[in-house]
Image 1: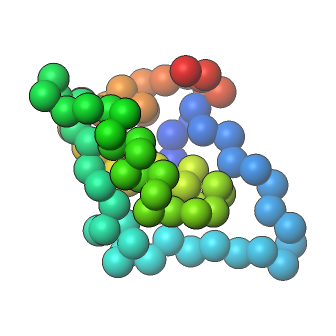
Image 2: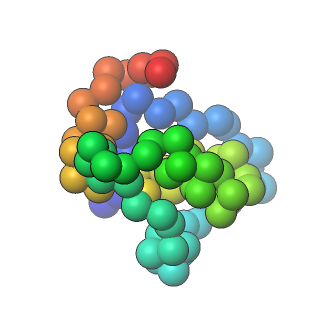
Length: 82
């Protein structure tokens, strides 16, 4: 079972399109924990550079968060905008 935050609305894919997140990609993602000494803007820049396809970015982003940052994401209401 893969849990995805409800606050992220994924675009519809064409029937022939499929994407799979490989565990190797997930392990290469930069991590953001939500600590005071971390820079969220730097995290987003590093994340954005590493992944080109928007759909894959949206699927992979929750895996780049940990600790308080991941807790924050999962507490957001459906279709929350920041």
